[in-house]
Length: 140
Image 1 (cartoon, one colour):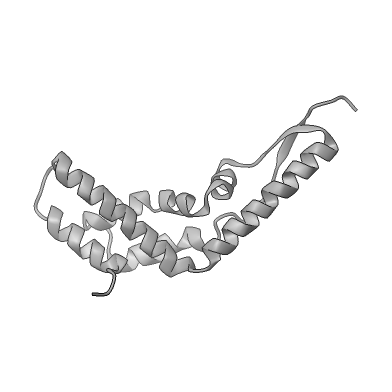
Image 2 (cartoon, rainbow, N blue to C red; image 1 turned 180 degrees about the horizontal axis):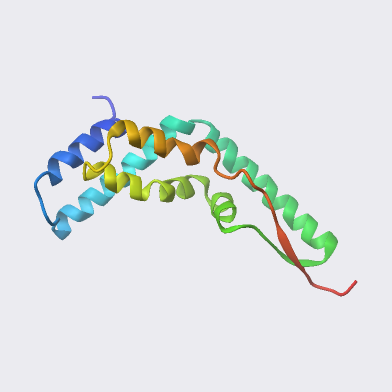
């Protein structure tokens, strides 16, 4: 038996919640797990091996930043929230970006095609702007 695709998981979720006004706790937990799996599979389909590349890039950047902080006697280097989130965990960042879309998809408020289009946007350019601000430890 082959693993399920995110589209198959979507159809499963839609069947399970069809016609319900409320979702009980048991079903809510199951739906949450399936939605998380759906988002992970979608991200893998859209970015594939680029996720490992992003993790590697993030790790190298963090190492370099530690050297820069030491050389310049800085306490910290602060990135914009979106970039900081992406650098911390690229996959988790992308899953968070898909949260609302995935809920809309499950509730049939968004089509699978719209989810594919909108959901792929953050994956294509998770952070176009790289800017950093820093605070100095010592006086110059």
